[in-house]
Image (tube, rainbow, N blue to C red; front, side, top):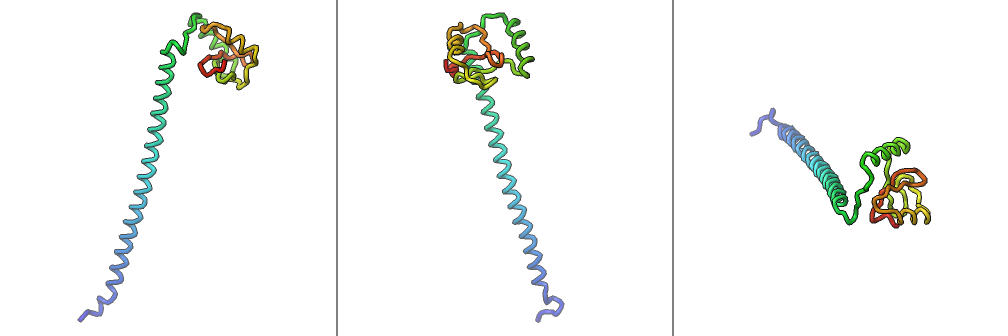
Length: 144
């Protein structure tokens, strides 16, 4: 025969166990959400790192391949001083890539006369944009 003082203990134990199980379930949900964010951050970090390494490799391959890049014959000091002067006058950027007949510095398309002058210039000549004055870097994508 049950005692009268034990009469609602099952309800109290059940409520206590339910609160413990609820706290456990909430911590597992938080843990799974944290793991998802950690995996996403690792993926983004890996993509950024490998992208940067690929860019460095591509630039070094471009510079070492003499069929794509011809080193200028002008003296390095002359070219560096020209670059520094142009950089000071152009807001911090002294050289721009010539990409699809456009100067990437001022974003203006070169006219036909200017393109003909650049096409006729030797590979080691220092070419400057007529609009912004920046040194133009010619690549296979220049569109000449």
